[in-house]
Image (cartoon, rainbow, N blue to C red; front, side):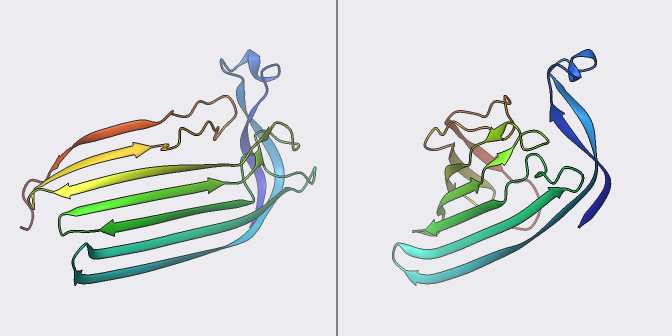
Amino acid sequence: NRYRNLITTTFDPIFCASFSTFGFCPQQLGEASTKGWEAGLSYTYSSDRPFLKGLVVQAQYTNTITRDLDSQSRLPRWPTDQWSATISYQPIDPLWITLIGRYVGSRYNTTGDRQPLPAFDVWSLAVTYDVTKQLQAYLRAENLFNEKYEEIASAGTPIRSIFGGVRVTFGGKS
């Protein structure tokens, strides 16, 4: 892909201070290009075996090469490598246990290959239980290993968080 007049957000507390409270402002890069590839796979297994009613495995990988054609530097916040994976296991009919992982490779927060952001991986675990066709209980742990990471420099990300609750479905097909 080629872009003309690409505008991105950059962090520059000195330059952006006059019109931005937090030091972020738009910056016109001019011409840029991106190229890459991605692949994904999905596998589903179901059976009547005890403690193995279902298994779903999904994975995705993306490789992206970006370039600011004026400076020949990478575009900000675009990692070269990213992947995600999900494994969902159903030991008994109403219960699902799902593990989700996501990896984001190293990248730069600003233009000109400045302000490097390190790669990170973050994992989540979710459990759902269908009490009835209309009522589902769930428990979910985000950032399971309490990873300290930044999607964007200085923009905080949540620490390990645990959520629980119930979902109620009204109407629809039974």
